Amino acid sequence: MDSLASASSRFVLVCQHRSCARNQSADVLAAFQALAPEGVLVAATDCMGQCASGPTVQVAPEGIWYCRVTAKDVAEIVEQHLGQQQPVQRLLHPRFHFQWQGEVE
Image (cartoon, rainbow, N blue to C red):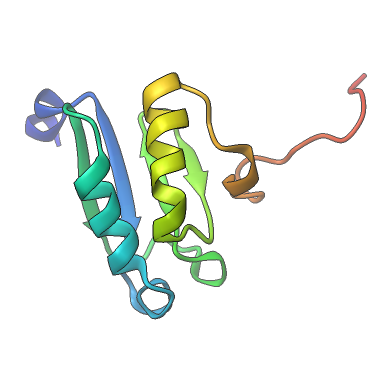
């Protein structure tokens, strides 16, 4: 992994396992490959363990998980998250990014 880390400081991992593939994860992967800025490595992965929420995308090293991503969502993720460092709230995976409602004491 060290050789990959030296080539890029950010990674976009797109699940290509069975349930994600049935939900057009290949289109999501192709969209990221076409739109990702220079210096961002885009890679296909095997199962990421989130089969009911696919296609699943993880952005590292931030540890941001997106679920039910479509090819139409990719431009927004690239522009807002990869470009402006602001995760796309509506696509965040609730298992990893629980959103508190109201004030936290």
